[in-house]
Image (cartoon, rainbow, N blue to C red):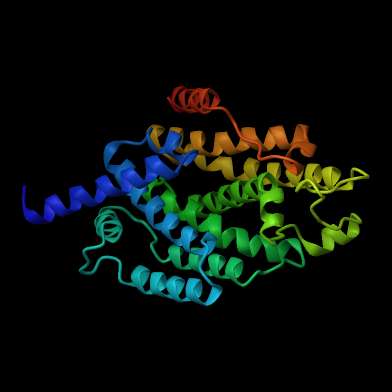
Length: 289
């Protein structure tokens, strides 16, 4: 093994370590990929995780923006000389697979919106944010999957990313509100007569049930994005389809629970037990065959 190949192997190993330790939901699907694609998607995840961690960290806003600008420069230099293991792995993956690495720039833009405390006046405004932070990951992943028809696959991957992000927004409504973040469209909150606030117990206040009703309506809209995005699966090879179906399936099942019991997200973080995630991953692999 040459020094260069050893460096690349170590870089992929580091990305897989990051994935296993941090990607609680996505790791179930990533593990279903063929090894050469698994490493590439782990590298995509590792850089996305790094960017997200900047936006979600405890540093002052101006320092976060500085670090995000550094990340932007790193993205533009992917494929060039570097000793950063995540960038080494991504450079190798992008040389082998049609990964649109510039999509990471959209993720940086979305994180900057978070740092600046952006609110979204209407759903089209929120949709732009969702496409930045999640549609971008869908498109990056599709490059790893090598869809049979990339031009058809890209917008479907974008839609699936939007579906997952809308699910995240509903799941995390309480936590985000505690951090001063509100993602639901301001015009829809006003139309529903909802003012989001935490009560004395740190839960989302909902004395008249209007917030729960709004969450249910938002979940129904997210369901439509899943229906569109899941049309991506027939465009993928069976291992890639299984991986994609497992990752999306976990979030889709989570959305179904939120839609059935919207009150739950107002007081706790709704999640799936590990056994159910394993079941969904196994079912995805069988179904893809």
